Length: 108
Image (cartoon, rainbow, N blue to C red; front, side):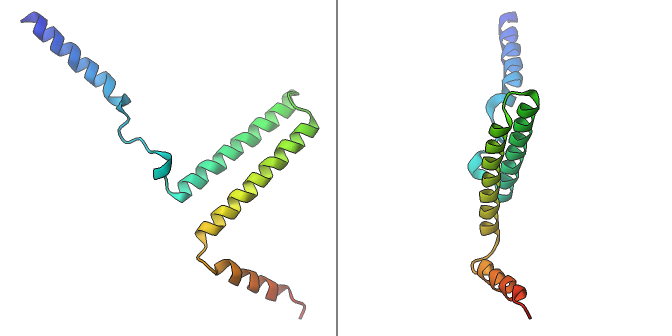
């Protein structure tokens, strides 16, 4: 009788300890909304900038490598912003906006 109770108690304790690791409620990358993915991408790029700046300050990379890496990050940010703009604007909105800007820039 004591062995059965002890075994049951061990199984209950193990179940309570293992339950959080079962992965319930875990969000997969495919299930994220576009805004959540964009936010995660911006945070990742900000972290990369901090790491590059830290490497430059600590002497791990020289100024030339720093400029090269920062330029690469800038192009990544630009592509990300262009992708975000393309997905948030309705079709044709970009062309209409471009026409309005061109009209506003014409000398009067």
